[in-house]
Length: 75
Image (cartoon, rainbow, N blue to C red; front, side, top):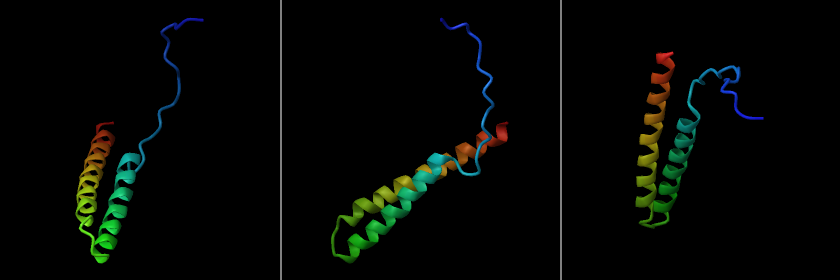
């Protein structure tokens, strides 16, 4: 009925080669870069916003990759 304080014996999942958040950020970066190119080719200055989003997601990719590698080496 209540919590007995016992921990479940669920096996821990091994870390993957590329953390999922880093992969998602990389996909956003590639799509934002493509959107920036298309936007600039159409003559729209809105591409500047896409370039900024690509830069932010690129930094997020590197951050999550380094964090994942550090966690993997720690184990």
